[in-house]
Length: 183
Image (tube, rainbow, N blue to C red; front, side, top):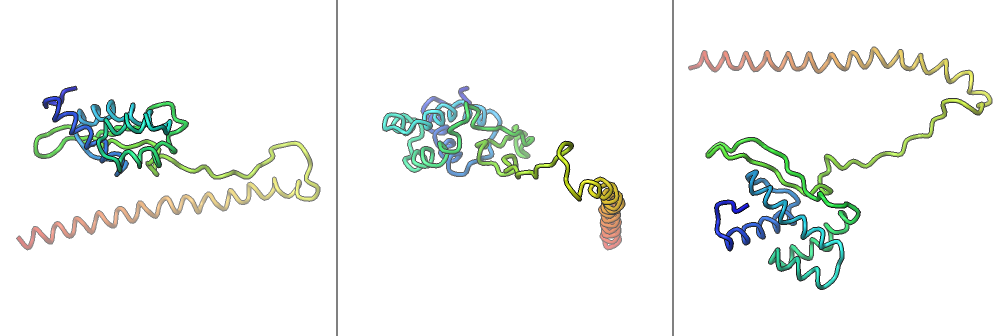
């Protein structure tokens, strides 16, 4: 993609965008620039998996920023070490107000806390087999009673936010009417 620029401008723009992506872990840009940046940065991240002088020089040739190269090899390479490609994610954001250009968010996949969740260790439960000496008869009888107590409470909690939403809508309508009356 030439992005409507000559080669020197395009290469320096992609290098700067790549350095910003490495530094901030996500950037907002136009969709076409995000797609071009993805093609530009993915091979550089792949080279950063093996920490050698040769690969550092290859990355520096693309990025032209020694701080970005050091962060790439120090932090990012450790997180993406076992990932076989696909280091970036592009999320479409809609159109820009001024010129109606398609905007996108490009981010490094392993650095997004919303999508990367630590899984909690679950308790090991037993469905059948093996007898619990004294608690075997009591446990099945208690479980339905607990569920019956929790069901009405959950239903009441679900209704409460709806009432709050209705109340806030009424308040906004009243405020709008007061503003119209003042004008």
